[in-house]
Length: 320
Image (cartoon, rainbow, N blue to C red; front, top):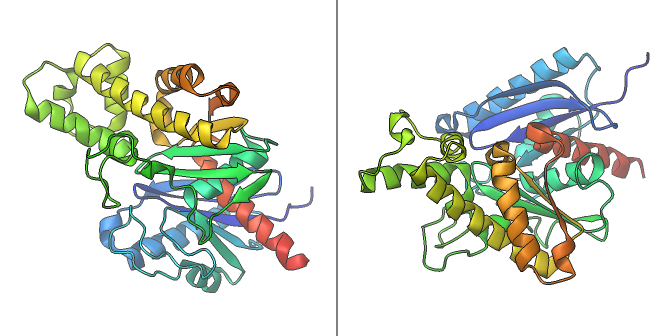
């Protein structure tokens, strides 16, 4: 069987790096995921990322990639291919990631906000396939967003449109990495779910199974909440209510056909999806309230496959 033309997809997250070769059918090959170790700084992390890319190319056995697609949290400048100052990567200032990737692999490269890439992947291959208007929220190290409007990817004037994580859900509330207070990201990201849980444990002597965990993470909170732990359940219910508030506002503004939730926090499954969906459907204005609210169809590979879709589109544009 003839080998399919494939592109290399690179995802730069605050917690993990992920790479794969992606074919036009939306399948990933040679998928790898490893810790970012962002404290090492951009040079070391990028060298590690590119090494992962080379290992993925070898494992996929599809030949050299025809292009490279990169997804990363913003702010970034997609036009110039520069990571200007990603909030989840402290110290990464004006990193020319597209030029570096193009030089490393000898092919054209493109970069987009990770959630923008993810919504493209979900629209083409996943839970939002074919929807004219679709929204995507990623709940991970941070909270990002992306949108499809009238069947087309919406990037914003400078390529950073869709920062849904910086909707205000609690005015004057928790400090966010963006500099404002009360943003959704300050409450619903995996990072901040964990921080809030640790604060609750430190502020009181309330009994909780979380006290038996050395380093509390978001997945510990969701697991404890599922088991009925009162402290974890209180925190989880507050988190899902604030997330639902933000999704309801977005549904009222965009009137989408589908809202997709992705990222590591959504591994909680129905524990997250059901309350968010119920609140959105009961409080959003009709007919927007009919929007489908669902989990990402591409799972943990959503940003990688989205980055691959970007690279495939880049190839199509260069052929015109």
